[in-house]
Amino acid sequence: MLQFDHVFIAHALDQPPTRVRVQASWNRGEFRKSWDYELEGNPCLIPYDGEATLIPCDITKIFETKKNFSYESFVGVPLKDADGEIYGHLALYGDRNGDRTIDDGRHELEIAKLFANRAQTEARRLDRESKMYQG
Image (spheres, rainbow, N blue to C red):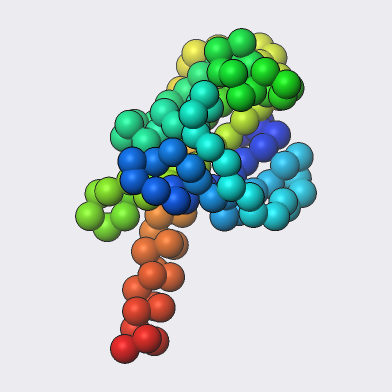
């Protein structure tokens, strides 16, 4: 089971990405409203290199923007359009590292990639439907 405290889907506002808008967010089980933020100094910039990433611990020590947060771990997965271009990312933050092993982290990364794939499919469906109704 995934044990993350903050999960969100964000969309890049510029290219190359420096700023994103969170489109959907859950923090400790509660839905949060949208917000924009800068990617510099943030682990969320990593998925824009094209690969899913797992940082199992100590992100508050590694990333300047997370120093005042309680997060320990991060999983980031790029979201791609039908042409394979990265347009956003899925981010999962965990408050505690606990007793997770690297194998557990890899398992969580694979599940996050499956979830991101489902989100991409839904975004593409919504895009196709909006184009059908416009023309």
